[in-house]
Image (cartoon, rainbow, N blue to C red):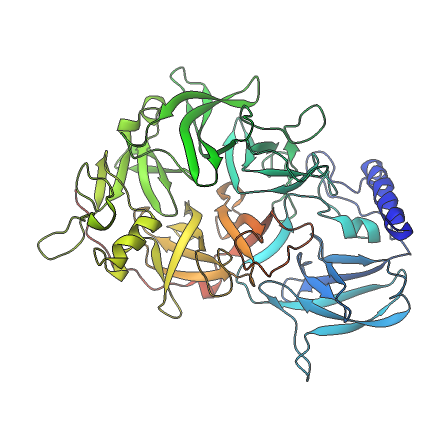
Amino acid sequence: MNKNAIRLLAFATVLAIFTFHDGARAQPGGAEAKPVAADSRYFAVQLVDDTTGRGVPLVELKTTNSVAFYTDSNGVVALDEPGFMNRKVFFHVASHGYEYPADGFGQRGVALDVAPGKRETIKIKRLNIAERLYRVTGEGTYRDSLLAGGFPVPIREPLLNAQVTGQDSIQAAIYHGRIYWMWGDTNRLRYPLGHFWMSGATSDLPGRGGLDPAKGVDLKYFADDEGFARGMFEPVHRQLKWADAMMVLPDDKGVERMLAMCTRLEKLDVVLDRTLQVYNDKTDRFEPIRTINEKEEPLYPRNHPLRVNADGVEYFYFSDTLPSIRVRADWTSVQDPKAYEGYTCLSQGARFKGDSTEVERDAQGRLQWGWKRNTAVLMHKEEAQLLRVGKLKEGEARSRLVDAETGKPVRVQGGSVYFNDYRRKYVLIAGELGGNSSNLGEIWYAEADRPEGPWKYARKIVTHDRYSFYNPKHHPFFDQDGGRVIYFEGTYAATFSRPDREATPRYDYNQVMYRLDLSDPRLKLPEAPDAPVTP
């Protein structure tokens, strides 16, 4: 490690300790953070949204000799490069879903006079409808803001929280008045392998001690004796445990409990078993209460549950992407696999049988959809197979929406659905499998009058260039202004993008938060035609 790197690391460490006492981090109760004093050694440039004036994270500044810097959650880059100081330096400017104007030679960038202590502000145009706000997890979320000084830092742990350097796929629920956050896999600083048994953290709700979601999320991790974010399930060597479908409801004694579905895997495509588990408030870990045999009963909770009152009955609705499974939201029903219903066009009791699967149609040839127990539902893989053999027509696949601008089909995968008070509709935020710009990197918005749909038209709200951003989740507990403004996050990772794309330092394999204004006229969608539903 060279002297410059050692000095930078030492300074960052000292600065982190200093800011803990000086108030650079958020005060208890989400009070306004105070910036530390500016450091005269650093040249600082902040990239801001040309419409909102807010700093834009994840903007790349690259010199003509391919030295790349990336803005932190404030949109700040702090430079202490001796070879660049007191010189004019050209920086190429690039960011997913944002654009810097090109010059006469097609170069999108700017030449800056780099000098110690100097500050520059550069405006960048947002192409995305949704606005990128900040990185939620990982190391160095506000690193450059702290190095340069003079920028407010809203969270308590702006450099390294619970030794976490990467986290995958968010789950979240309100439990006992707090937000409980869970992530699939977690990377740590000291070794390439972290753990694979779900990490967890809590935060206060906005208005109840928590930060305004426009500013950030203060995460308090469940940590082990070494301070690293620990597993929320009992660890099993060489196995993975992933959880979803976090349901909060009263038990048979009226006590609020939290349930989750745990999938135990040997590797990504080898499932060993699925168990319904309950959260133990004393140990702060999930514990199994029953095994789910999906061969006998194909329906079980998954993804992000949605509470729906249907004909006076409270249900949890679940989905792969669109709501397709439901169960009465009571303690007994959620534990009984026979109580689950699937929204499907297969005949009662049918299973998916590959190319020989038969769908149910009426005399006019229309698909007959309905809620049925002990009957398989069609996810995107099954629908794709039935489309290929002609058992389904292109417009009949629920997992394929239509681009409202071009009319082209959009194959959505992974996302969440919640009712929105502002639109008075159910709102979908979902990723796309095999998008034009990237695989699993383009995020779409759609809406429907009922959770069953019909879901037809969609509008792209976020795009990435050869980079994945998958499993997006809308957080309805963060909705503002009567639901007009919503927040969602997803996993930013090179994992499923083109192999020639290098991973973005610090950001890769971490959660990034976006904000979407539902009053934006670009979100207007055509009315979807209704579809027949069996009683």
